[in-house]
Each structure stands twice: as structure tokens, then as C-alpha cells.
Image 1 (cartoon, rainbow, N blue to C red):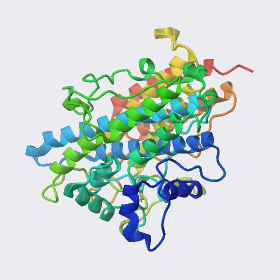
Image 2 (image 1 turned 120 degrees about the vertical axis):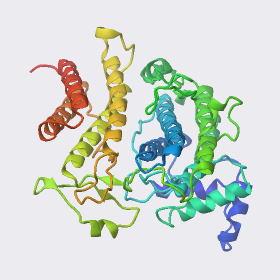
Image 3 (image 1 turned 180 degrees about the vertical axis):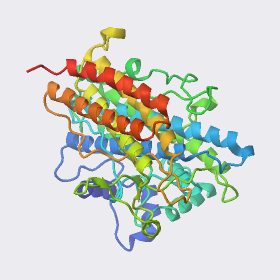
Image 4 (image 1 turned 90 degrees about the horizontal axis):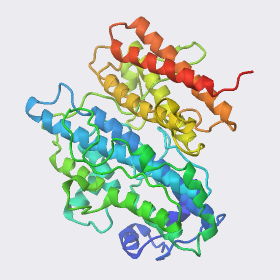
Length: 482
């Protein structure tokens, strides 16, 4: 992929970008072009698909990083007088993460419209992150990570002294100095230019009949309307922006949807209504308020938490505190506490279930049904929402559990580990068998937690066992009997 993306960055430079690069160019003169240039080995349609795949992975990666940063906030280390402020920051970042989920879904709709394969993948650690806004890192919210978030969502043309200071801090605070920073808006601008031009992507490539397979606001916007979004840490509801979930049936609708996503991310002034501030503005507000060492707004969660299994010994691989201390920040921190790692495995299964359900929903067309008369599509969409809630609940549990059994006070955290594959089986019965396998795996992990730690989150685990049992019965009905 980097072979093709290098072409994108090398040939699509604006005059302003060239001037910014000039001191580093060392005699090399990149071509200055106002329009995209088709790289070798591509048609324009195929190139548009590549860019949309990159956008999907960027949105997914940002969503996971923002969720982890949000769940890191709070805890006993926050002085009492700042707790309400930190709670507000958490709600803001959680809201942005939910909007990134909407962006991810909208990009899938555009992929479906132009007859392209979907992409719910994302970059994982500790591999390189070339051409991403910054290197993928799950980490507690810090001034440095906020600088990277602000820069990633920064609008073109914002060139103040504060902008320069933020960029410098973002680069210095990056887990590795090798990873260049990029604005997400650059990618969205290029996608819009290509999709808007009928000389690039032909009218016949836009397939209106695919809308019946796409995600719509009526199905996916529940509870996310402005001012009605559920709050994770407070019973009081804040005014919040809409989550963008746009089905698209024409070229213009596809371009408008991508423009709306870009605007919600990077607009300098999004709306006169405070609730409609862009991601850039909201992150900038937190950056300006965030303490620079005076006090700690976060729990002691690790960088890049991970579960590691020794498959030969069928046990968790343990690492010493000394070994963890010697590990570079860009690598992983293994969760080794026996209870915590079991919860982390349950988290990974639920995260996989969310992604599988979302992907499966795009394979099913038609209405969702209501109540006890849900269609397969309706059942899958309900399952997707259920796993969103489980990811939230398990994240709150994990940030309060110990990382290891050393007594150091370090906390665990939600690992967001990607599954070995996101590919769905080819046939519909086999897709339901995959759901069955995941539910049975989750049931076993829940049984383990209830048996070994009966006093820990018993009500949640009991409710989860009941819900999984009912879901498993519904799933089994979708599998043909021999």
C-alpha cells in the first residue's frame, strides 16, 4: 500500500505545501499540481477505492484511540476541584469517537455505492503507520497526544503561532520521530476532487440500487440526535452534534457526504451553535485547558495494552516489570493480572463481535422489522448496538483493574486488539455460524469470570449471560439444520 500512497503524497502537492517542504527538499523539486495525478497501476475508479480504504482505516484508528483516551480520564488521582472539568472532557472525547464511528459507516456507504469492497480494518501496533495522521498508539490523554489530535483534525490555512507550537509539540510527542504527521482533511479533499469529476469516475460506476444495503440514519442514528445522545458518566445530557450517517445514491450525494465528514472534523468555525463545534475546535479547547504537569487528569493506564497467549503452554505469557520498563513506548504493554487479562479477552471478543456485526449488516438488504418480528438485518443491527454498549461497559471495568499482580498501582485498559481476520464467510449460513462461535466463546469467558471472581461485577455478567443466551438462540435459528 505504501508503494501506491507514496505516489499520492509525492504528486499531489499544492503550492503552499511545496513552500512548506522547500527547506527540506534538498534540490528535489516535487511537481506542483492543482488536480490529482493518477499513479501507475490504477484506473481512477480503483484509485478512488484505495483512498476510501485509507479513509476507513484512518476513521477506525482515530475512533479506537479517542475511545481509549476518553476512558483513561478520571479516577482518584484527579483533584476534587477538577473532577467535573475532567468528566466534561471525557464526554467531549467520547462524543468525538462516536462521530468517528459515523464517519466510518458513511465511508462504507460510499464504497458500497461505487461497487467497491468494504473495509473495516485499521492500523495496529507495533507496525509502522506511514500516511496515517500519526502513529497508531493507545495511550492516556496527555498534552502531547492532544497536540497530535488537534493537528490531525486541523483545517488548512490555520497558521497561527499556536498552530506552529501545536505541530512542534505533536512531532516531539510522537512515539517515534520517524512518523510524519498528516492532516485528515488532505485525504478528504483529494477524495472529493476525484469522485466529483465525471472524467475520473464515470456516472455508471455510481450504483443507486446499493442503497438498500447501506446504513441509514433511521437504523443507525438512534439516540445520537443533537442533545439526545446518551452520556456515559453523567445523568445530565449535554447538547451534542449529530452523528453523520448518510446513505448515498448519486455522485453529488457521495461528495456531499464526504464534505460533511470533513467539515465535522476540521472546520475552523463549524456552526454558530456551540454544540456544533468541529473535532478540531473541541480538541483545541481541551488542549488549551489541559494541565501541563500541575496535576494528573488520567488513570495510570498503560500505552498499547495487549493480551498475549503462549499457545504451546495454553497460558498467559507474563513479562517482568523490568522488561516492561525497557520496552519502547511504541510497543505493547502486556496485561498479566489473571483477572484483568480474562476481562481483556472478553473485551477483544466483544470488539470483534461489533466489527463482524457491522460488516454483516452490509450483506443484508431490506427493512429491519420491529419487536419480536426483527428481520435478519434488524437482528444484526441490534447486535451491533449491543456490542457498542458492551465495549463501553468493559472499558470502564478494565481501567479500574490492575495491570499486573506486582502491587504497583498500574491499571489495565481496553486493548482494542484486531482479530486475525475481518473477512466474512462466503455464504449466509456460515456467517451465522461465525456469530455462533463468537457468542459461545464469550459465554465461556463469562462463565470463567463468574466462577473465579463471583463478587466482581456480578450483575453485569449475569445480564450479559442472559442476553448472550437469547442471542445465541436467535442465531442458531438462522443456521440450517442438517
